[in-house]
Image (tube, rainbow, N blue to C red; front, side, top):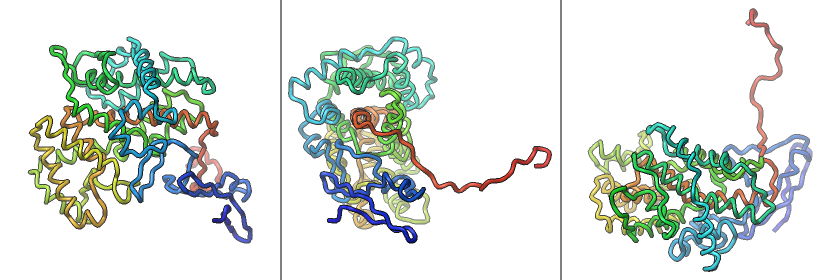
Length: 428
């Protein structure tokens, strides 16, 4: 294979090196393009064909339905690992030994207490505030309570910042939900595992002991693992580009949360449940809405089917579908919304229109069903996504800083007015 790409502009020819990844991905290195061509740039709205970095964290092949964290297939991680193991692997490069995992968890628990003044910030939000807005604000506020910047060249300093945010973030998530529900804030228990404690902090009622359903816990563990990283998506790219200015970890994570909030990104699982609610209000006829989805002249969009990156199938959806079935059976939930969801799934899996176009239910479809069954409010779905994505964001921020990547500064093609003279206000 050639190791250079040739570009011809007018009468001039230019050569640019090719970069090849460990999974045989190929990129044209155009770092010198603008200088070599006296100002020519590329334009790629949405950066669909532009690599912003070289990364050793996550490999994704949308055509083949492959997702690997640090080389580990997502199927194996979801089946055999717990979320904290996956978080460690993403951040530090390899799955931990039992001693490393125990120390990691112990250190996280030791940093899980949030300054009590954070409650004052939380109290200032009205109950109508969206949980993602609250979570982004509280995460950013952690900077004020931890003002010293992270010395990225110090492993000890970096490690301390990582365990600190992994300890405090689940508390902010739980408090955000309990604030919306008018429940007292709590810290759970140090005796529990990471995910078990998240559940206790979120769901414990003040007048009863909280018992953990192991099937629900396993499903939540899998959901968090499946959402832990997904290459250079919108929120991850945001974390990296904000961090490239040497903004701190907490501030960069807050920016990622805001990016995730959008309905085209992390808000997709919330959109699924809102769609199901609308179908229920209209009588719950799934066949009618499948026909609307196939009608090009109908504005209705079937949420939770297909994926922008995965062109064949979403490997995460295969895993979480089984967990969704187990959770619904275990909880014995009698919910018309979930019945509509199962009806849509059944129709899509046998309808040639959807099968031929590979429009299968994706991870957002099933995650919304599980969260609904667990009793998590719809507006909290994206917050749960952020909880899962946290270790991926940390890993990406850490990699970007250690690689000493330059500050992000995209170019543009200007399409506005050419030079014109100022006109005084009385003559305009």
